Amino acid sequence: AESAATVDGLVPGTYYVKETDATNKAVTMSTEVKSFEVKADVDSSKIEAAKVIEFTNKTTTTEVEVKKVFVNANGTNTWPKDAKVTVELRQNGTAIDSQILTSKNDTYKWTELEVKDQTTGKEYTYTVAETKVENVPAHYGRSTAGDAKNGFVITNSEKVGGLKINKVVLVDEAAPTENKLTLADGTYTFNVYTNEACTEAAVKADGSAVGNLTIVVKNGVAESAATVDGLVPGTYYVK
Image 1 (tube, rainbow, N blue to C red):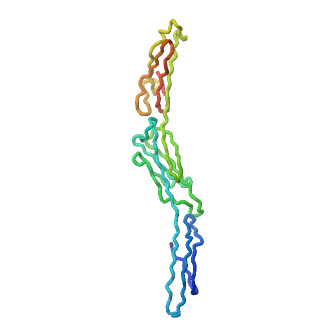
Image 2: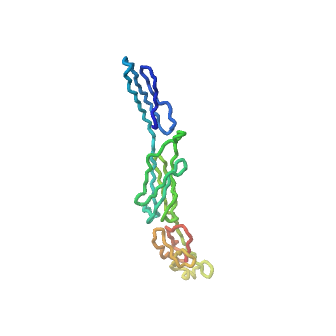
Image 3: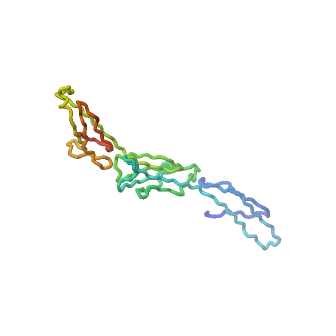
């Protein structure tokens, strides 16, 4: 406190003191009632020492925790290599701090945060937002769950797709007939590329090669389609 509140000229007797108002609406006022006594003294040369009464106001604070999680297409939670994520703490929508999360420090807790506005006494709303990512592939989606009380979890999930190839065989520009089945039967091999010139072989999200895709046609009918999963979003070419 910048100064104490004082009162003089009290006649002898018992007095009671209670805190009745506080301009700082973020604090909890004391509910105590304290008493003191001013005594009469027959010796007017003696001055009774001033009574000192103290009241303690408590400021309620809170904590907000955030955790960063990666979910990969193969079911693991390994972070992408050298990934860094910047997470912002917002108070009523306004950024008040930011922290960088990494694979070694994937959780952060803000402490001693004010619960109420000092002027209005209204409770603050705390949220988090991921504002920057480094070395995180673009095909990772993002979602945020939780709240200020229970903590937030920001999840980046790897989005992948698949490809299915069917084989239709025409003999002399028509479906094969019984006497032309041998011309249609066989094993057909396909490859997937990332460029139209078909010079750059496609790889899966986990870095493994797509490899050769084969379809076996027997008696003029494909036994099954060729499929590949784990492809990151993009344009592919099949040859």
